[in-house]
Length: 363
Image 1 (cartoon, helix red, strand yellow):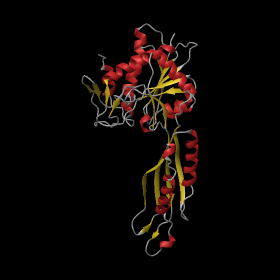
Image 2 (image 1 turned 180 degrees about the vertical axis):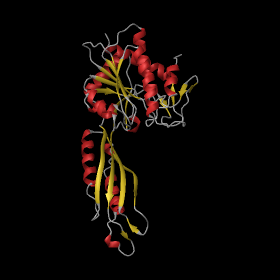
Image 3 (image 1 turned 90 degrees about the vertical axis):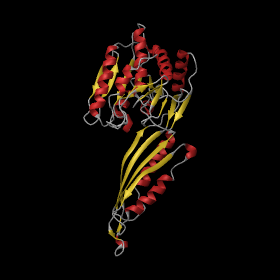
């Protein structure tokens, strides 16, 4: 049976995104694993989030270059969910499928090459520290290095039937701040400019952009404003998320949100808009299909595929024009809950598959 000691060590380090000390400790542990495999590392130091890490092979060949992609952070604050356990079928703990388990698959696959005496070339591994909160810092790094590679594998969790991910919705988040004018609701009603009324009308207009036939959703997930029942509201705020499945819809929705948000429909109310596109749509492409075909030939059987509404850093690399496949981690469930688990058989399958794929890029 597969030895999970290294995964256990990874899982038992709390790496909540806001726990920089823990994220960096986790990163140093993985750095020790990768160094033993002959990789060098570049550390992108950060003050407010954990450091991002790029592991690279010092020797390059004329073969295509492959980027392995993962993240160091998890969603559980210290003291909430930190233990690792296993039985005959499952391993349990924070990150066992999202995505310390996926990183473990990548590391074990690389180890299998080294154990077989294969010299690793042209394979780099990027681990960022803030994926779970939207990659607000790391997205610029990921985008800046993406075009150094011919292909990318992301190690988010596999589908229930070991599907790999060929498409993901894009996502944008915005905050709209509305400023009106306070007035006594009884004595001076018409002297006020009602920010709450503007927000309500804006919410309806934003939600009307949803088109389920196109796979487009616009959601005002949080709304707040006002002072009290007897006061015309001088301020309101909307927190908005949009998701879309095509580049055309992405452009259309971003343009429409800006037009609605910056034109409140109440006289005397002004609006400011912040935020924007977090991750581009990940769209199936001919280059991705060719990559999938090459992987299937190396593995020896077809791989099931799926598209997902959720996003990952694969969106960023795919958006840069690099052939990208996601979902090469293990199958699991309960991620982002205290019931998170991952299948032991799935680990074994994925490590075997990735080991065969990586041989396409080595000497």
